[in-house]
Image 1 (tube, one colour):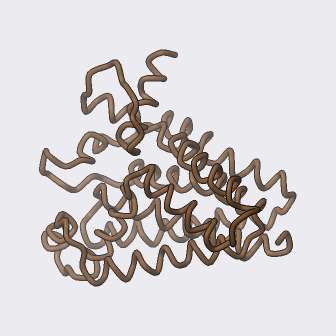
Image 2 (spheres, rainbow, N blue to C red):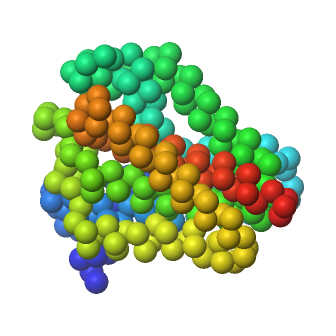
Image 3 (cartoon, rainbow, N blue to C red):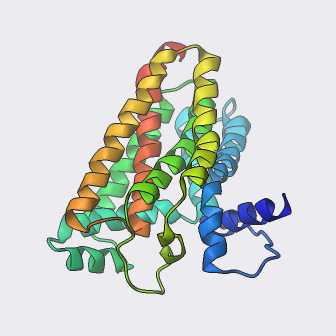
Length: 258
C-alpha cells in the first residue's frame, strides 16, 4: 500500500504543480509505473474545480464561475495538457513530414494554429459549461476530469512513442502501459462517469462514450499517419479534446436538467 501511495504522489508531482513529497528517489521506472494513477489525478484536479463552482456558483454570474473553475484547473496542472494541445495544433497544422512536425512541436513558441486551436477549445469548454445548471456542471466536471485522462492512457496502450531524444519529459512513459494497469486506470477513469449517469438516470449520456471513441479514433489515426505514434504533446492534446467532448455531450444531452 505504501508503494502505491508513493506511485500516486509521483503521478501528482509530474502531472500537477501541487507540492508533494515523494520519499522514493525519482527514476524513469517509477514514473512509468505511476502512469496508472493518471485518472486519479483527474479526481484531484476535478476536486479543485468543484471547490470553485461550489464557492461561486450561487453568488457569481455563471460565466465568471466557469471561467474561474477552468482557470484553477490550468493553475493546478500548470497548463500541462493545454500546452500539448497547442503544440500538436502547430505541429500537425504547419508540418508536412514527421521530422518537421516533431521539430515544430518541440518549439516552445506558440504559432497561429496553436493559438487559434487553444482559443476555440477553451471557448467550447466555457460555453458548454455555462449552459449547464450549477449542479449538472459539477457532475460534468466529476465525469470529465478522470475519463479524459483515461482516454489519453489508451493511446499509450495502443500506440508507440516516437521521440528518440532522451531528455523528453514523456520519455519515461514510453515503455507503455500493461493491460492490468489499463484496467486499473479504467476503474478510476470510467467509474465517476458511470456513477454520474446512474445518478441522473439519463442513459443517453452513454452516447458520450461513442463520441469519445470517435474523437480518439480520429486523433490516433492522425498521429499514426503523420508521425507513426504519439508524443507527450499528443497525449496532452487527447486529454484536452476528450475533456471538451465530454463537456459538449453534457451540454447537449443534459439540457433538460438546466
